[in-house]
Length: 72
Image (cartoon, rainbow, N blue to C red; front, top):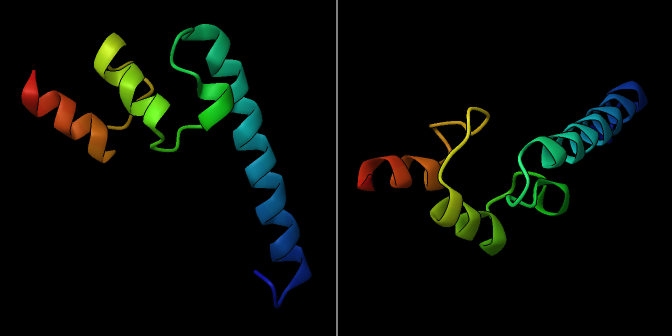
């Protein structure tokens, strides 16, 4: 990314777009805190999975989701 400016710019744009998508999903799925953790496996995210379960947007390959599915 750091060697080619176009790739660096694309990476930044993709990150901003993903963050904006997570903010929008936070309104659709209240209680999960997507706008704050942006989908990363923070303590808040893992606790919300335990409390609320998984949604259609959670990837089953995401380790905390896989663990949730195996235990339920």
